[in-house]
Length: 78
Image 1 (spheres, helix red, strand yellow):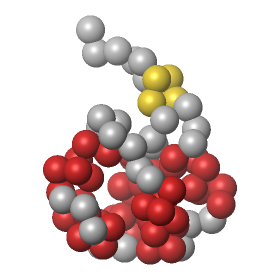
Image 2 (cartoon, rainbow, N blue to C red):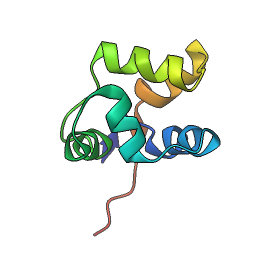
Image 3 (cartoon, rainbow, N blue to C red):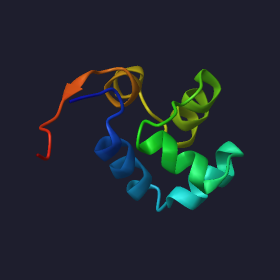
């Protein structure tokens, strides 16, 4: 299975800023379930949302690439 979003790295950044998914959803102006879908790659972050997250968590360009644009191979839980 392939994943594009590095959820663990994003969550670690959120933790550093004492943010919950609810906090981030409110900041981005989306519903919690919408953010949940993005975290589970049922939908994707927009360019604007990625930019806002970059600003909120003071991410470097490299961190943005690692979180949002690096293809990861995961093991299937079969």
